[in-house]
Structure formats: structure tokens, C-alpha cells
Length: 509
Image 1 (cartoon, rainbow, N blue to C red):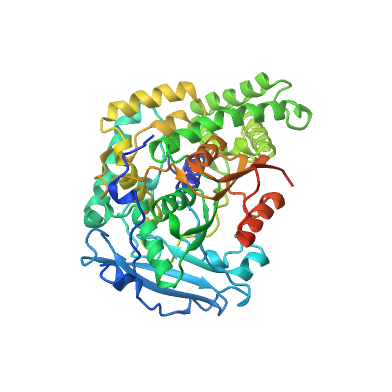
Image 2: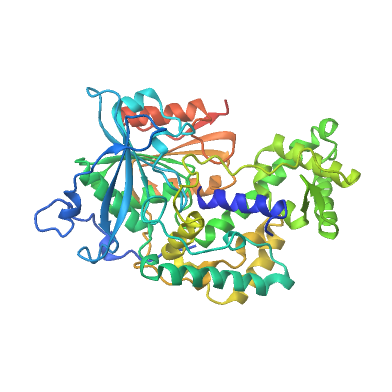
């Protein structure tokens, strides 16, 4: 599950009472593509010459779905040193005659395992694309079956965001310190190498091992940033890249959380107008102002006396934490109407069931990995990548949370509050500055709660030569499989290599 999806999951757990920008300097190594890994004399040559031992992934999967493991350097600056394992999978192209190459897949995160993506029913890939590409899944370093990390975090310590309250802020600081300290104690020698740049290098080793001159790629959410970094580091080896639900590369890090809170406010305004026009159905108010008043009255009431939703107490902070609901106007109206009924009757809400996380494919928990692997890996990659963007002084987070709660009442304090990255050790190198030529296709819903439209537009501007497909009034995180127009554009690009002549706007199906 990608980190923004997990933020939504954390919010939903909080809601039922279970748990309450950088643009760094470009390093010299990033200025040009690394030398061909298989070249004579290159210290990475042994890695590029590995022969994968393909075997059936598991008994419940198709026999054609095969898995293997590769070794890569933990530290690419010391290729003769410690190694780490990368798990990869393959579903061969259905046509040997029409086969073009390989299509690497990434579900997002950081922290999302992608080994099973080629056979995940949630991933919609057309027959035309399947004819031309071997679908390649992989668990990024530190995740799933790729030498997974764990920090020994308790369920309560795995929360990603906390609402700001003066009385609980000291406790929140202790939580952030504890997570960072536990992860450092458990994986101190590994954490600084769990970076997006190193995952991109791992992808290039996969490319070399598979005997391909170039790779094509389909990445979701955080995976769009990973894809952009690969095209920056290895421009001559990037073929056709589709970036679904793109993050703003200049705000990756702390700004990613804050962008979600900012994007929730116009979604809330849109919802209040929609609900007002349907007062007869939902009874929330005849004007947008009345609808908003109804909602905030519920928040205030739940702060005084928690509501009971599905047998669990729901506080005002818990209601605010459900910001992602307001990107789906129909569902949000039914949910708030249910809360209103519960408040009026003092009974269980029929519409208060916890929502699932946004539909990022290929992200179930992996058996045999540490119970906190997804959370530990998410913090490891995010903090190592963007450590410079996180203030060290806890009081800065207090001030920012107070400020942003006023600016973005739904969840500004959740976003700007303190996180473990404040106490993390630096990564092995600065992150990559994304701002280069790349013929990528970006697809995006207009109303995405996790990677807002403005961020995708920023990615489009950063990747010169890219094209963007926007689903007007499209709701939710991840476009794949939800809009025939956008899916068609992606299929045409992957099969023909031709980007749209201009940016496109698709209507919702």
C-alpha cells in the first residue's frame, strides 16, 4: 500500500477509535547515466551477468507466473561490499512475434510490494499490451520478499499522522523519536541505503539481467516519482513510461502530506455544493454554507462526546481524519447523513463503516515479512530520500500544525504535525532533482485525494516532452481501470510509442 493510502488507512483507524518541499542539489553522479552495467571492467558487471533461476511463484498462481531473486549492492558506492536481495517476477508476453520488451510495474509507496502485480486482478492491462511486453513485478529493496526491514513497531506506533492538540503534542514528539530510534537500532546499517535512487539502480540491474537495452514502465502514486527518477538517472534506457496519479516531485517528502491537506479543502467545498443541491435526499442543508455548518457541528459534538460508529467511539478528530471521503461526493453525503442520524438518535450509524484505502493494486501484506514492514519501509525510504526537508526542532512542527489547522481545517494539522523523519539519520546521498526531458504519459483524476491534480501538473511541467491525460470530474486515487478514455491513451502509447499530440481531457465513464 502506498504511503498516502496508508495515511488514509491510519485516518480510518483513528476514526473508529483504534488509534487516535525539497529541491536538493543534483549530485555529480546524477548528471549523466551510469555506464552500462555489463561493460568490461565495470564493478557492476557481475550483477548484470546474473542468471535468474525462474520457478513458479506459488501453487495458487498461474504456472506461467514465475519468480526469481537477484543480488544487488546494498551500497552502489561499494559494489564489492554487502549485498541485498531483490525479488522479481515475470509473466511473459503472449505473442512471441509481437513482443517488444519488458514493462516494469510499481504499485507505489514507498513501501508497497509489487511482486504479484503481473497477476493482480486489480491491475488492468489490455490484451494488446500483454502481447507486446513481459510484465515484470518486483519488491523494492527492503520491502516484501526483498530483504524486508522491520523496526519492531507496535500497532499504535505504526500510525502515520496525528492530529494536533496542545495536551498531546509532547506524546506525539515521543512517538516520532521512538519510531526513528527503533528503526535505527534494528536496521542502522541498512536504512541510509533504502532510497529511491538505489531502487532505480536496482531496476537497471533488472534490465541488464533480463538482457534488455531499455525498459518500459507503469508506476502508480509514489511509483511515478520512482519512474521519473529512473528517467533522470538512466535517460537512454527509458522507453515508454506511464505515470498514473503523479506526485509533485518538488514536494516529495514533507510537502507530500501538506499537499494532501491543501487539496482536501476544494474537495470539501465541491462536496458541500453537491450535497446542498440534494438536500431532499440527505438532509444536510439547502445551501453549501448550511451543509458545512452541519458538518462542523458534528465535529464539535463528537469532540465533546464521541459518536458511536460501528460500535466504536468516533471523535471530532476522527471525523476530520476522513478527508479522503470528500473526494467522492455521493459516498461522503451518505456518510455524513449517517453521522447526523447517529448524533440525533444516539444510535449506531448505518453509513459509518470504515472505508478501505484508495485502490492501489498489488499491495497486500506479504506473508513471512515483519508485521511492520510496510510502515518501516515507508519511513525508511521517505526519510532517507528527503531528510533535509524535515526540520529538527519539534517546536517548528507545533507552529506549523497550528497554522495549517487554521488554513486547512479538515486535516492541516495532521499533515504538518511531527513525523519520525524529524529524527532520522541522513540518506546515503541527496535526492534527485526532477526537471528534465522525458517522453512520459501522465494520467490523473481531477479529484485525487492522495496525489492532487496540482501535483500531477507539476510533474508534467518537470518532465519536458511529457503529455498529460486528465479525467475531468474523475474521483479517487489511481486511474487505471476506471476510465476507458485514459486507459485507451495509455494502451496506444505503450503499443505504438506515440504520445498524444497534445494534452487530453477525458470525461468520466
